[in-house]
Image (cartoon, rainbow, N blue to C red; front, top):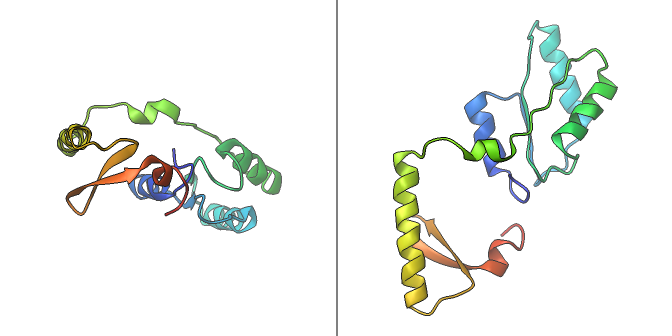
Length: 139
């Protein structure tokens, strides 16, 4: 996830205490990342987490790891691609409430003649965003 926007990657980084986050909005340079990882290793840090969003312009997590390995051949790299596993787990109270609010918004939109829109919530208000705009990139 995160093909077009880095907010999920950033949230994941905060939650995991990651050392770096590579997102689609910024063209990353692997050299400074390697310098940062190497600096941590010199300080006896034994591990590091780098979050690579799906849309990272440096490539996939595996491709970034390969580039790091090429620059730092003695650095142990491991890649975990979460895929659908990250979508598992029990929903929180907020998840359930949001699902109900958005479901209500979707039914109300249909009854009011809306179609081809995504239902969302902005500042506590239900909003209708045309699909074209919702999937059209960075807005």
